[in-house]
Length: 395
Image (cartoon, rainbow, N blue to C red; front, side):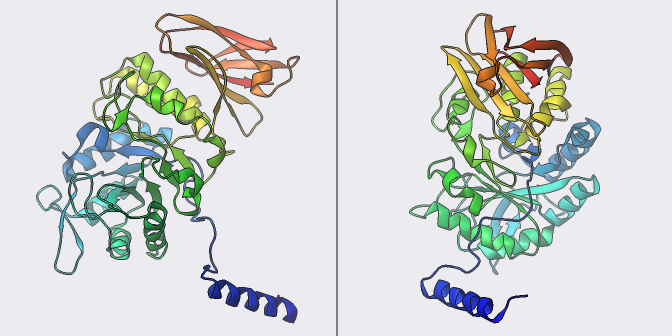
């Protein structure tokens, strides 16, 4: 219990904070959500605006039957184009032709599968596809999402004009907190306003770059290949942690624009980066190779490690790189990465991983699911072009 002096001091502090315009409850977002990076599926990368009630239900079914749910995936998220207008009271209205049973019924169906339900909106007057955005309706929309049973909101940044990003996202963050329902808040601001500097006070994850493209080496107007996005993560690792994550965008694994080897590399890095694992392929129709990538539990365990440290690049020589991530048990997850066009030998030195050179460590190949024995000082492997060798190194 506070004594009289403490109570007086607290009262004076409260009055002072009000006088200078600082909210008494100013503090980092603490909704106790996303303590490990969120895992799930989003409609945009594969289906774009072609979303419907039947699609989402069939994806929820497939998430269970394919084993994705057992591997840790839980959020089923509808991206843009589910909404068509606002009614006379300003309430957001779902497309009645594509979602005839309504969003509440669809969320109930997803929940009946033991999964969680996500939805999309925008901080501007319109979404990126020209549907109604949430500007000026933030609290109204948040209450509607809560009533529908929404568990996750992806919030975009199109048609925002001169809005201040931090203030706009803070408005929706406060609206979600006041809705009475725990809702993961995903900021999709593309990294333009350095959200890693302020995002943890507002949301659970924030995009660090523009959109991802389903290719190994391409550059489009608003999207980039995943290796280009990977380079933009260097130096951001200190901003991530339990409840607040850097988001290099959703996964392209299985969408057809890359080889299985390149998809395996893509997935490996998203796990090492402690990135949200939001699948974006048609999970109802996966090849065995893509299924094996998305459900490798040892690789996923790297992403979901409760310490919550983001991996970083520890060595680079031209097209050859070594990345490492500290794990809660003291081990390191390690990626030997070959960007080149020919196979190459890459070594991970213990000192680059934060271990003394004389230490003997067990090495396990996470894709081969095979122990490689004890090694001292370094580990060397041949790495395929555009490929990775992903290891768990345990002293």
